[in-house]
Length: 267
Image (cartoon, one colour):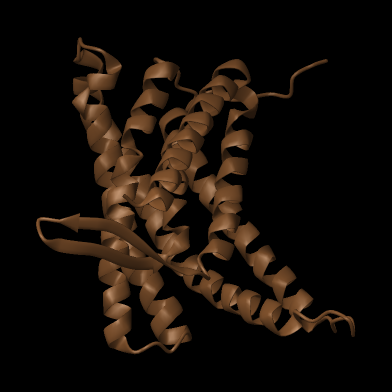
């Protein structure tokens, strides 16, 4: 048994649960600040993923039916479900316009991140600092990875936002007419599963080609392998976050703040 992978899975599930419950509590108790809180989560996940993405990781899923399943992908794959989920959370409660606004805010933070890293790289290191070469190598790569992520992030996030909104609008009557428990409502599952799986698949292709082929200069044979591996890992992990989105929807009930105009609260 791969205990490292088991530890990652358990920790990932705990983190996803904490984020989901916390998000519901914030949105229901402080609806005027919920959008800001969810956007803050969104930005934090993205910035973390840019740093983590510089590490190419191996996920060993063991041997199944005589075949060893070992996939290589940027380590940030573990964060993509968080990113996809929180965008769906914003879209679900605050609507498409607010979701697009969150995407643009997050993109602006990515630009600032690259500017700050670029400035830090140019600052002369102290004479006694022995890790300057390693630091520069890692974070210079991070800049290139971030540039690639700008394009894939913008395309796929907007794609996810508009697809989610469209599917929600089309299936809304059927969703509302469903009489069972919200956690079993197939129309809630459909919009999360379809949008996350499709947008993460497109993201895998765009990101890997730009970051590791056009910028990183890796051989095309290696790049195609990374695309396939990342497609599998991203889509599988991305789909795995769906129960937490459905839990979020179930706990929220009929909370819908899309058409609410918030005003500054008087103290």
